[in-house]
Image 1 (cartoon, rainbow, N blue to C red):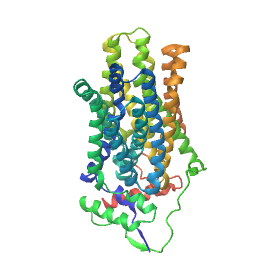
Image 2 (image 1 turned 60 degrees about the horizontal axis):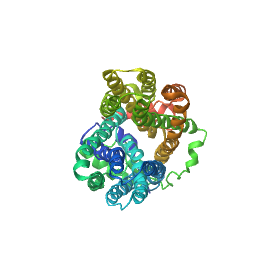
Image 3 (image 1 turned 180 degrees about the horizontal axis):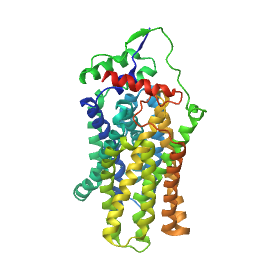
Image 4 (image 1 turned 60 degrees about the vertical axis):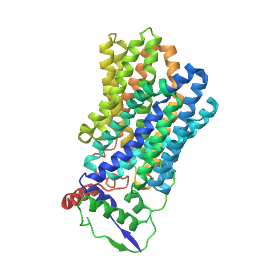
Length: 462
């Protein structure tokens, strides 16, 4: 016999409480340390170059190894989580980049460090896929956007903290200390997260209804909800939903969602990397002072926290579809203005607002992707889209440099603005609205009536 637990509806009816906040912090801190370990490369590579421990060419190999690892990690995380469970994949990837961060601190040469960084990147690449997906599956529809924004605030704080810690630690303790700090923090979090529950939605989808019901009862008891949303009864033994191959992403009911997810993930990742990673270099190469470049850096640090903070308040009003579209248009407009500014104040202010918009598009774009796919292949769909985005980052530098060589900074900015306009148009024409809807109601084979039925169940049981 199997148990029909109605996991999705029971999770969706719960009011936000201590359980959801605990999930937010445990998931968010994983993304914080992922951001810390990913961002430390700038200060660490500069220190290694100054000490003669590395060269510009080896630094480029280090970055390439990081991007390659991130790409593989994003792809593997989807398969692991859909096959073996969210909790297993989540802890597995965290252990990989935590252990490898500590190992990095003892690398005997840059060549060893590059290889270690590749393995470490696999763990880091999985964190974003897993983090957004876990929040999506636990948080009720009315608050999913807010929690994605709060997740972005925690992640953005990792970028800021990295710069502050690097400023203090590297001159006094050396660059190896950065890997130690990141590794110790990550493994500490791995220990804290060992009691994070498995997703009841996933358990029910693979036929493990009794386990799902036990977890749901604990969550409901903590939320002071005791009456089940529907009778939890044994049903005739039927096989769980069959495991689906990744090819399902290209079937007729799903391919529209897959293509939208690909476009969004590729463009928001490419836009974020180009604006935050390349613009200071372009400005300096065009004769601007280093002060302007530092002003942009300060704006980036503030914008990566302010943007997600704003996102937490507006995401559930706009939804992920229109939130990304509006953020993309906003970024395109500011991109077109930014290169022509000359005063430090205007550069800093415009850069602050631009990076804030980039962060909003990135959070809602990556965070909203798991909503598009059913539980059975939700993480593979999100992982596939992020993998495509990571591949774009591997080849991105060559494209950017070629455009800059032939058309200058105006060409680069024009291209980025055009890409943001493209993603806005794609979402306007083909986007799927998921805002304030249950995950089950927006599945490709869900009937339009399901959303109304689900909403009525939720209201009658709150």
